[in-house]
Image (cartoon, rainbow, N blue to C red; front, side, top):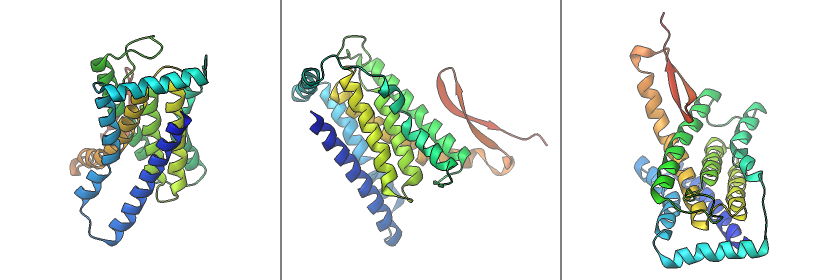
Length: 251
């Protein structure tokens, strides 16, 4: 079933190319902001929709079981911890590129705040769906299969890499999404997730980062009002949840 991942990666690359092409068209034609923002969510919404439908539709459930059976037959006893590390590689790459002098869309503080905001949205969404769906993992270890948190983390980071470097080169996005797709594949090879868990995780991850890039400028503008011109926004991580904190000079 490796063809499944090749197809998924092709779809993701096609999506990146489409986004880049839309940006070029928007630069030359009067396209409304609402139209561009709405179109950006079609692909991740489709992934999420597939995952939700797979919970009830028998044909999609059969796809999950067939893919799992093929993986177990082709790679019996497969196990690796590489997915635990690979999920963070796209975001590590963003900071490595920054330190190497390749500038992205934002400075260190802003892009860090964007990443934490994205992870806060993603983490809350994944945890809520895991609790609500109560889906058994393929290996029977617990009832938190749907959706894949590793995959959501990886795709949130991949979209983060794309957003920061899409004006530099399409290939940064391709690299990030390749690592994210590999993470999802390893989760299934490890027998921890069904195919629909991975697809849904990808949709949530992509949408979470897109939403953070939409919301962050609004949040920053509100926090940096005229009365608090010296306000500084920094990311925080407390009680297992990422977030933002604001500090205001007293002088």
